[in-house]
Length: 566
Image 1 (tube, helix red, strand yellow):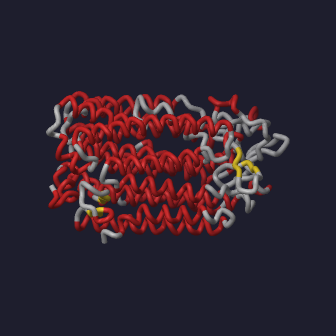
Image 2 (cartoon, one colour):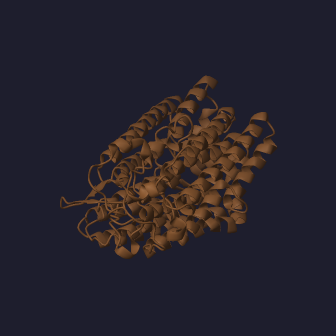
Image 3 (cartoon, one colour):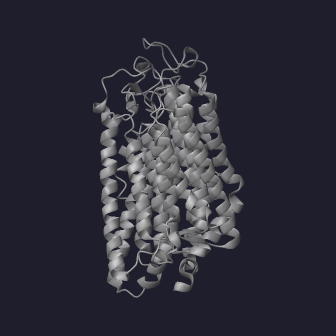
């Protein structure tokens, strides 16, 4: 079944090429994109079962034996993240399609979105199966190109500025990573991860430290760890809701995955574990303090994203099977829950016309189902028992307690504080957006910019009643321009779905708001998926533990990749 592995990259890239040739046939584009991601999910799930039963699967591209050719490697860690990532990519795609269908405008969707999204999917999936550093670099560059297009969809000044910050930071990370690859090749004579693992121990200590530090910095920027996460809060909130959701759920986890590989395969000795634990503490605390200070839902979620990256770094920094297993489990949990919360924030923006908690209000009465969809993943992210967030954090705290060092106990304290402040920040959003009535002072101006720190960048063009000006403008072939809430336009709702105020700005939130069925259905599936993590927590944690045990013995990975060529 080794032929399944290359399909994870080839099918999305071929689908992107076909979708690009169908720019004037959006229905076909949508169908092709959905089919491609369904195939990718089926392949990933099949590989997950096969790898767990039969061990690591390795494909030597073109028949060139390692380390001379390109190795594609799927072990338990890769297979698990491939399956979760393909699931998230499919759910977010369906959400974006729902926004386009709800727009009641056949020309509103941006047709370049579909091929770009598939290139992004190929980059994500390729990152998880790359068996050499240069292939991993190529996957990162695919992500960079696709994400820059997606983050600037609409071409508004605010999105282009945020996209510029994002791409400059990403290019710096790529330059550091590429320089590190050159140094690794110069020192070891290879870029194959398995062969690097064999040869690294023979290098002088100071050379190992230099290579380790450079790779860790490059991956740390991708993962958004402190102090390398400064770019994220200003980049993600400006993007459309589906784009932000997939970015928050997956792109930072690619960096975490690379860090796990770095610390378990390339540098299995605890060379920088103390540094990682300190970084984990600072990432958790600084991130959550940033979240508490926000009044915009998307920015708040962006800061919680940073803070919870610290939990994953904590598990890696402990350098034990228990710590790595908890980190893997928490990574899966965070991918699903963080994506779900960003999808819910997209619905909140559709109903309230903004994501600013200063302007939102009365959503519990207007959309009771939306209130429930927000509350469940919020409790999960906050670590309320018995949700998967609690199980993952408990596993991390247990691993730290087994370690027993003062620094390990400090990470426990930081994790507890972060969990409590995360819950406080998310419940403050609940109180402001759902529980309290809509502020009377805001009723006359319900479409204030949702990105308050950049209020001076507001476009002078009037926005429809259901769309905040922060969402910007999107173009599509033919030269016409339309205001959008996503890669697919979210135009003014019909009277029965108008969210909060009449055109003259007078009136309170309606008794009920009729949300588009597909958007609600997809978001509900995402919420149920986050709950399902709790239901299957036992088997999932067991799988994560088996993955961690495999990573604990780098020789297994080396033997699987190099085989008789060692």
